Amino acid sequence: QVQLVESGGGLVQPGGSLRLSCAASGMLFKISAMGWYRQAPGKQRELAAIITSGGSTNYADSVNGRFTISRENAKNTVALQMNSLKAEDTAVYYCTIKSATTGLNYWGQGTQVTVSS
Image: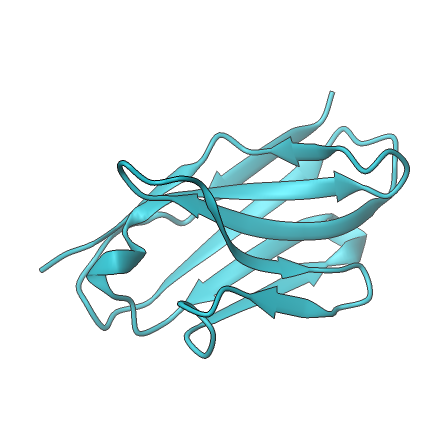
């Protein structure tokens, strides 16, 4: 059974930094893309950042230049370094992986990030 365990969320002041981590286990397939989505209260879930198995990255315009996504293929982990955080970054952040075999996406349970003074 595929399991994604996220960590690193919390409360931070505007301008601060947080690092989210996600460890995937239980797969019987290779992972293609890994990424982070976020969902703010009253809004739809949106892509924050994604990284392919080859290391290509894509960021939402709103986080580009402030967030950095990275992954360790051998450990099936993905991280999101978030700098210069703003109040509008407040959301539940979800880790996701995509199966290279079926194209199905798997999701973590989410971790809360709150940016507030």
